[in-house]
Length: 330
Image (tube, rainbow, N blue to C red):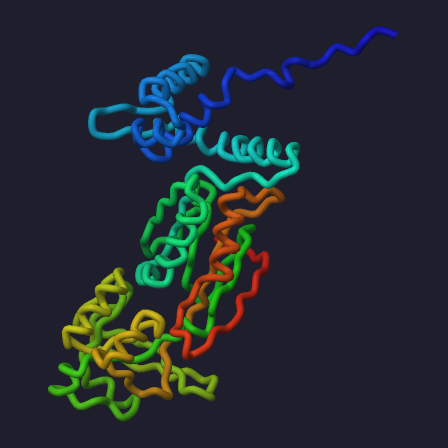
């Protein structure tokens, strides 16, 4: 009986050196040959030759080079997305074959909402110190990014409810995202503090971009489930919630802000908590990652650190545990 001939086509690749793939992927992510070469531990010329060799083998340009920046071409964006998991799987397979766990490495891309930096910064500092082979890129914005299409590894989202998808979500400190009414003492000197929701109509408010000149906001009395809609007159709105807080500190008006964002200003007296028995719309904070059986070591390490190390409220108020679940979310 003759030997069965291997179907070579199943294993063929145009790439002879996996380091060429790594050089391209890192350069694509960092948009810098110098930074890529440093991470690869080789000269800039060597890294450049690797990418050129890969482009020649594929017969297409993957990167668009200019004196100011390096950007992926349309083909480069697609190729980068498809080789990402291959490189991570290979690293994990090599580590498993050696009886060890793969060392987190590569670029970790994170999306976070405005106003979350103060809570996230200490976690990022610990992560960078613990995993020096990972380069972290944080995108801050109000837009809900598409993790798959835009190649983000982790996204934080503050929302009342997630919509359908196949992402894996961890709900973090949900109750601590309650929004409370605050104002600076300087504002309250000129405007008597409200004693009830009915007094809010006479005050100036600082809000968020979806707010119109006069907007209806639902408040809830603690211990009651029925929200009360109140019409508010807005003096300013911004997508940057930190800016809204800072303008409130200047005494421009009242604002409804997450307790975690203003607690230290309440503690030192620069802001005053108004109507303590009333809360604004409550959001849950979620940490999302892509689904699938394989979780890249860098993602696994970051998720584990966030679940154990993220603090959104001062220690004196206590912390609630997280819960993780697979949900349908975009």
